[in-house]
Each structure stands twice: as structure tokens, then as C-alpha cells.
Image 1 (tube, rainbow, N blue to C red):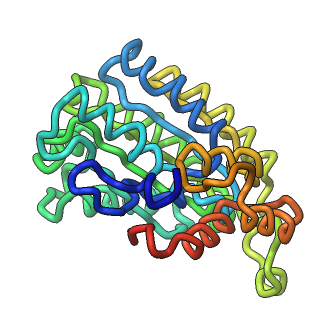
Image 2 (cartoon, rainbow, N blue to C red; image 1 turned 135 degrees about the horizontal axis):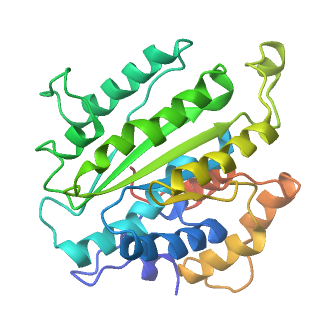
Length: 293
């Protein structure tokens, strides 16, 4: 079954991909980790927020992986359990720039979350509990909160900020049952190991991946004692066989084996293909079929 046939919808037969193809390739390992964690913890530790820690280099498309989970895993489950209501999932993406002062960073993080939810909030009432009870979120059975952090751009207070956010700020929301299921994704974005020339001339702050990963492991243990917390394996370079298998399962390649353009990409990159590399090639190759996001 080719790309056109795979993308046909039953209602009228219009040719259009039902979901963005370029975020669905590879990541079998991390999707499996999510599958083994998500539903079991909804049952075993009902009513508690979930925390997901995702880490990897800049070119590995952390945000698109979260979108993939929302589209393929979270939304179908939420709709089947709760019905449509206002739509089964609300996905918000608060962002703050790196700040040197810890208290400023805490305050700015709180404001960024409420600014994403609705403009009509009370600045004196910005607890996690009040966030969950805000009238713009209560119609949604599932709320996904995604934070993206370029870790090399933060100073030493960054670890304190993350620890406070997960073990302090959100822990205050556990005094009563929450009206919705909160899923918190923290995307920790490492600088690329292969640096462009301008970055070598103007380097960012020094970053130690080993020590930061040790922090993530310790943080996971601490947070999981409060509510479910999953530390994903690092988002790394893609596996060619996994990519080709995914394309075959999605029905976008008729001829068996691996598409020639995929093999060419892996040869060009000497096997070190990032998700950004693959997304770019897929978008170009199937530009007529992939709907823009």
C-alpha cells in the first residue's frame, strides 16, 4: 500500500495523511517506555499528576516526540475514557528564557503557565491547585503541560528551579483530588555535540552531560515518591532499520526494503542521523501529502 492509499480516509476518500508522518519515525524504545508507564500508573496511582523527563541533543526534536505521544497515545485514550467534552486533551507550552536569579525564575515560570492557560487569572493566586481548577482547564479530562529548557544556557540555579517545580510547586496540588489528569513533560535540550563554526567561536555556557544525567536519575527517584515519574532513555541518533520498518508499517513505501532516499541520508550522515535530519527529508519527499502544522 503506497502513500496515497495509506492516507485515504473512509469518509469520502480524500487523500490526506491523518497525522503528521514526519514525527512518527523511529523512537520505538521511548514509545515502548511510555506504553509500559502511562496506563498502568493511571490505574495504580489514580488521580496523581504524571511527570515525564525527556532529554537529548537539540536536533532530536523533543517537542515533536511529545506531539506524537499526544496524537497517537494520549488523545485516543482520553477520548475513549471520557468522551469528547471540550476535546479530550489540552496541550499548553509555557516557556521562559534563562534567568540568573532563582526567585525570579520561579515567579516567571508561574506567570508563564497561567499566561498560556488564560489571560483572566489572579496574579495573587497562581498555585498548581488553582491552575488545575481554572475554568478554562476543567472541561478537559487530560492536560499536557510541556516545558522546553536549553540546559546549557542556564546557570547553576537551574537544578534548584526544576527540583522546586516538581517536588514543591506541584506537590502543593495534592491536598485534594484533581479535576483532570495532568501530564507534565520537561524537555531538557542538550547542545549538539557537533557544533557549527559560529558556536565554536561564541560558545554557550559549559555543559556536562554526565553530571546532568546523574541529576535526572536522582530527581526521578525523588519525584516518583510523590507521583509517577518516568525518565526516558536519551533521544539519540536514529536507527536506519527502525526508520525503514516504520515507513513500511505506515504504508508509505511499496517496494520492500528501505527507500533509496533514506539510505542516501544515512550514508551522507555516516549513520549519525538526527530526527531533524529525517523530518527535513520526509517533508521534502512527501511535501504534497503532509499537511502543514
